Image (cartoon, rainbow, N blue to C red; front, side, top):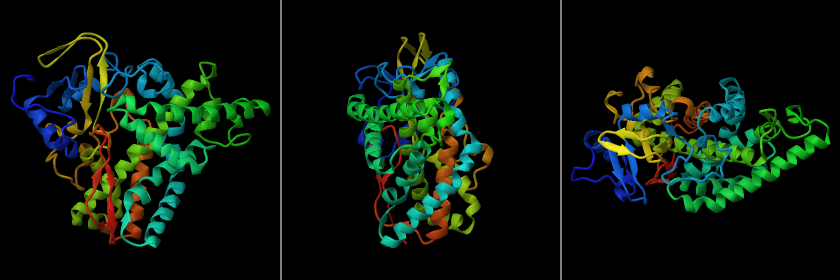
Length: 408
């Protein structure tokens, strides 16, 4: 199980990057625990659902502290939820969770729908062809998150997007994300300091200042909320906001492009959703299973471990492939088919938001935003169709359409 075979899986081979799913199928069948040294250190890849589940549900054995990418992250991003293990992760997740609960998410939907309608109408007014990624899929999540942040000028959206793109690429190339990480961090720290100074000057240093003294939103709430009896260190607070911002819009943009692409790729799928908008929710869930925006992320082992016939020293990088687990025939019927009639009990078994204690905090918001985008497009552009070749986004660890030309 592993090293004695002719085929070598290369996660960065052009054919793998272009379409990783055939390679994942072969990994599951021939080499479910795969080792490569091409990143300068051993990287093991797990492709079967049972193995992925075992790692995701064992946070004590498999740590996030050295970062989710293939490289080893340093200790400077101390506020990033992805970099903590329980019990520290549990406390910080509890700090951030209230703003992402299902009730708060539903409260956001009218604003998201109004933005979706405005974006789609602007696309229609400009006339075909259009670039769905640029016109709808990108601005809808980022403007929604900026509104959630509060106190952030929407005119900064392009800068934020640029920083986020570079930070996402850093999952595969840690050196390349340094400048963007520092710039976004500086941007957020300046605003955290300003919020705290304004609240203190007004004599209302607590969360009650949000919406009164300073604009309501995540920026004010997290800047002023107490953590272990004191305000969170501004460095940690900026890192938490940075991670939420990057994760909150990049993956939702890919979810929207993947979803629309698959529906238009086979015309009867799109027509089914146009005829029955109630299918939108199932379409979003099947898109998450079939085309997860995050193909996989890494953990490291705290103690010596054995995977298959491999003995691992502590601190070894393990890539858990969500995308492969999502197409494991052990869990899904006809896993390589995109089906709008897939049973809900099966649909909700995908790992596209992770699993266990690190399950994505923003999953309800991502689902809601993608559903609203699809409902709006189906209602206002029923004749939507592909108008040229698509291109995938740049990061090898993420999966989405960077170019999605459409007509109607």
